[in-house]
Each structure stands twice: as C-alpha cells, then as structure tokens.
Figure 1 (cartoon, rainbow, N blue to C red):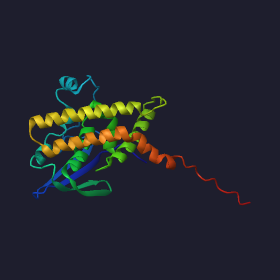
Figure 2: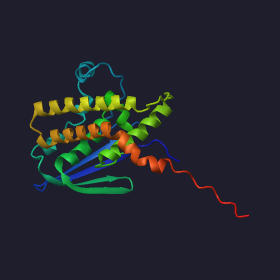
Figure 3: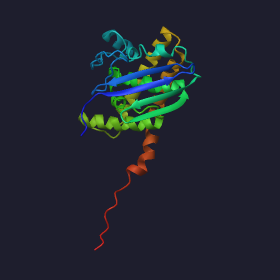
Figure 4: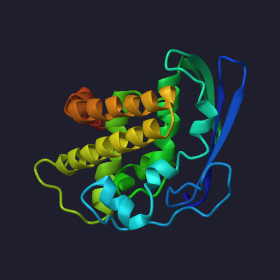
Length: 235
C-alpha cells in the first residue's frame, strides 16, 4: 500500500566546461522541499494573502518561489542559453538522462524547485513535483496537470461544472505571473542568462499547456472512450 514518505530527486548536470553540479531535492509527504543542500525544515503551507506576487512578498518577507532558487542559480552563472548539457535525474527505482539545451534542463529543475517551494500560488502544481517527471513535454505536462487537478477537486469535495478545467486555467495564469516575477528578480540580481531563459521555457510550457489542454485531451479520447469487451458466452 502507498504511504506518506519523503522522496529524493537528484539532479546531476554536467556543464560544457567540464564541471558537474549535483542538486539533491528532498520532498516531504506534502510535496514541500527543503532548500537544496541545506537540510533545513521545509517552508510550511501558508494562505495566499494578496492579488499579486509583490503583495505576497510584502506579507511573507520574500518570494518563496524565488527563495527556492537561492544557492542553485549561482552554480550556473557562466552557463549560456546556447550551451548543451548532459543531465541525469535519479529517483526511486529509475534514472533519466538527456543531452539537451541548458534552458530545457534548467526549466525541469527550476520547475521542480518552484512548485515545491511553498509558494501559495503554485499549490495546484505541488503534486506534480511530488511525482516529478523530468524533462516532460508540453503535452505530458498538460495531461498530468489535468489528471492531478481532477483528483485535487475530488479530494477537496469541489463540485465539477461543465468545464472542470476553467479553474485550472486560472492556476496556469497564476503560474505564468510567478514565472515572470521570478525571472525579473533573477535578471535584476545578476545575469543568469541560461537560468532566466529556463524560466522563460517554463512559461512556454505553461502557455502551451493552457492552449493545448483541449487538444491533448482529444488525443486521449479514443483510449478513454474504449469500452471493456464483455466475455463471450461460449455455452
């Protein structure tokens, strides 16, 4: 049987210069991560206090999504968006490896860190962090988000109207706003070219998820509409 437990996801990224960056991400049963490499207690859940990220920052001292990237972005200061990197992600029972442009790899890592940061606007995506799928495509993200969203509604006892994904659209809009806010903060603090474009890549995935959800679900219609064959009566 399944039971609540910690999960560890280890990113290893080999830079073109030959350096290797190891980033362990430990998630508790609520999908909250300790700051990378610090072993600190995860940030507890909070209620959203404002209409914009700046208001949330004023209430809580700093942007949780941005703070989750502290100590990680400095590892990639010299990485350019045009660089290709080798990346490997180790999780329980499996390892996923790719050779890919730096922004795509960083988008996967930064998305995991931000979704598990405790940011109240990203709570709808925390389950996706707990069951992380490294380097997921836009179609995979859209389908996973839709599935987790329906489970979230059922667990919380929320009624589903004719368009059960309308609120998911709002969650995606909030995700885009957080991405823009964090990207602006990163650029203002230092020139993290690859990291900033990694967040931009996250934005592209969010937009494609928003626009492509109906299309992605349509591709599943033949599978989900299939009826189980009854056992023929051979008597």
